[in-house]
Structures are given as C-alpha cells and as structure tokens.
Amino acid sequence: MSAGEVIKSEPIYRGKVIEVAVETVELPNGRQAVLEMVHHPGGAAIVALDDQERVCLLRQYRHAAGGWIWELPAGRCEPDETPLTTAQRELGEEAGLMAAEWIELGPMYSSPGIFTEVIHLWLARGLSEAAHAHEPGEVIEIHRLPLSQALDWCDDGIIADSKTLIGLYRTAAYLRDRAEFLSEGAGC
Image (cartoon, rainbow, N blue to C red; front, side, top):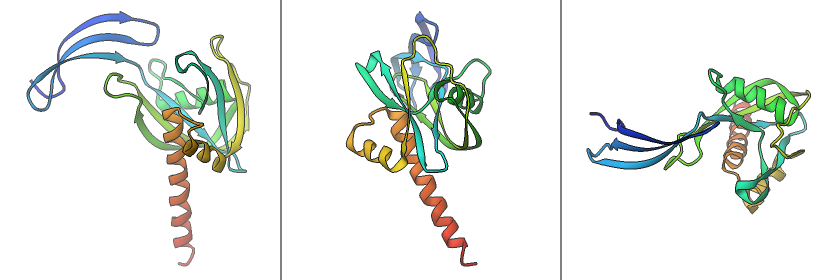
C-alpha cells in the first residue's frame, strides 16, 4: 500500500457538481485516517487585464458567502475540457470578453483539507468584447478597475475570495518580474 492510497470509499452524496465520500486513506507516516472528502472537477479563474492596466472583476451574489463579493471571472471544468478551454469559455460567459494572449499563473487549492478542487489561474491579455451569457442562477455585475486599486482592495480586505486574491497577487508578481527582466535586458 502506498501513501495517499484510498483503502475504502463510502459515497455519501452525488450532486450535479460535487461528490461527497468518507474515505479511509493510507498516510505518508503509515497510519490510516478516515476523511470526509468533497470531490470537485476543478476549474479556472482569469485575471483579464486590458491595455490600460484595468482588471475585470465581477461583483457577484454568493449565497454561501452571505451576500455580494468581488471575484475574478471563473468557473468549473466541464468533462474532457482543459483548464485553458475552461478559462476561455468562462471569460466569455461571465465577463463578455475574449483574449488574444493567455499566460498560465499556476494552480491553487481552494481548501485542500476537505476539497479535491484545483483552480487553474490565468492572466488574459489582448482583450476584446464578446457577448456574455450568465447562467440563470448567477447574479453578476461586470466591473473594470485599475489593477493597483484591486490590489489595494486585496490588502484592505474588500476582496476576500481566495482565487481572486491569489490571482491578483500572482499577476502583480508576474508583471513586476517581467518588468525587471525587460529592464535588465535593455542594457545589452
């Protein structure tokens, strides 16, 4: 038996998006643990940054969060869909945007103690308008604001959604590192 191996899985619930199971697993230290696991297909979130360094943020009603929150455009991976395809589809559906350039910002785990969900983060540049198609259960306002203001909102706690925080901070690091690289190369 190897670490992380599922010894026993008891399905508890199977819904449209998630599956819940009680799993007995082998841990790296050789011990066994009984864990409640929520299986999720994963998703993608997009930092859509226009030529004026404005980021697209959604003000979305989230019942689980108790009201309105600020988020990046994001969504669940459909079966046999790559994270990039998910990102491209969700950017159009939720924000009404298409992008010419896609830069991978890496994965993040939303709550790895209980969820299997992995969210793939992307930076989208070269934006153009498209028709949005919000789902019936979505209540979304589309906003664009300066990246610097969005980062201030992260620091101030106005933005509290984890994928949005991580996506914005990784974008800022990417842009900073790219600027440093370009300025170092300019003297050659």
